[in-house]
Length: 415
Image 1 (cartoon, rainbow, N blue to C red):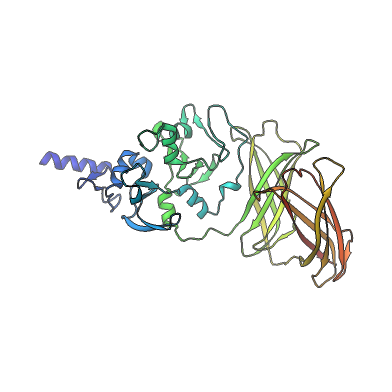
Image 2: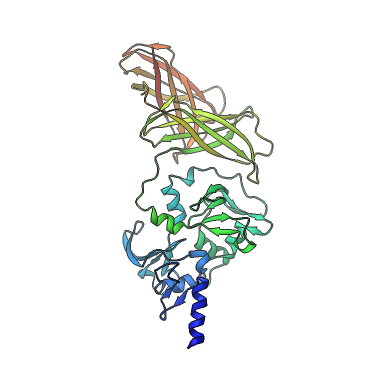
């Protein structure tokens, strides 16, 4: 009996779990007061244990699954969330994981679909066309790729790639330096169900660690995403005279009007090393709260080793309201004499209540998927427009292929 008690003491010192019944698993009280009941305990042990899931941070309780609209027994762990699905009883899908990578990004106000896709597959990496991202190693055979490939859910009859996909999901971002919940600046890559962090000072086995997404999502449940300026969608292309452009749309999610809205493009090579920066501004001088504006960035001489880019926004809050009360009397498009170019034209009326000048027309054109295909701007034919007076405009746009529809926004200055 004395030897048995000593053994239990050693387990407690190591922070390892101990079984208190045939199925329940408990942990040292200084680590967590919660136990893992069956079948969560078996699932935890089989599929990676502490490094993959962490300690439980709640007891098991019924919670609403927003996707199914049903209540499921649920337990939150430091790195994930376990759900019991009775409808799958007796199958490998009796316990399911939450999409905590996606959920945490949403809490942070980040939309991975609006972040840039990489140019394509990289040598020695795993490429995922669905999201446009690679998973690569960082030091030889050590890194995110090896970690992703060597961990997965143990499901009979499923190949290793699919097992890894079930555990971590697809990559949602490219690796970049971010600050984690502990305040450390680490190379980070987000996945549907996980966040990979690179800790170069650790031993080889622990250089890749999983972020504490379960704790972060649970602790921030119900918190609205921070109000920010955000990129809705964007793309890059090379025009007919070999200039590269980045075009897209900014949405103002804040409660204030914003001016001098600058969009900064950070340019990287295939190894994610910064090789240049370029800047542009939104076409509308003032982006009102709750509205959008197109933007464009011209890259005259892209670095020879340019591979991909990221975008960030800077702006200044303003109490000035733009003069934008115009009636769009007509709006259409027609062929031009230049291939893949088209004229967008129309007529607007000044309903602002004051005489205006320099009336700018901002054009945003979208694909059938409602992503930005092209942007542009021009001015009305009349420089000065009296109250109630109308004026025509005509704007030549390139890259017309793929355009499904266009929208016009109008702003002017007071005379």
